[in-house]
Amino acid sequence: MLNRMNKAGMDVALATLFAHPTLCDLAAAVTATAHDAPLTLPVADRTQPLPLSFAQQRLWFLTQLDPAASQAY
Figure 1: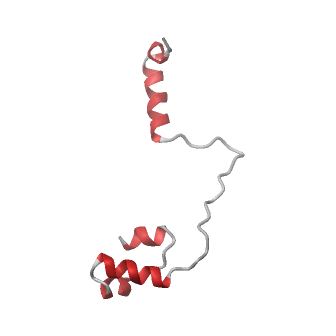
Figure 2: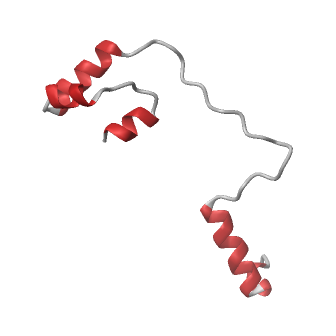
């Protein structure tokens, strides 16, 4: 849980997690120490093709298996 919180941009120490054993207490502690900096998303490198999502990979694979199955009615 601590790893996910840190990946989400929350700087939470392990001691804070143990000092606040309930979710309500932990949420209050994290909110009290939260920074008001806006969350920024990293810009994707557009010089190369973007990777496919899992759904797009699945559709591509199914099209390779049976090209006629992807034709519209």
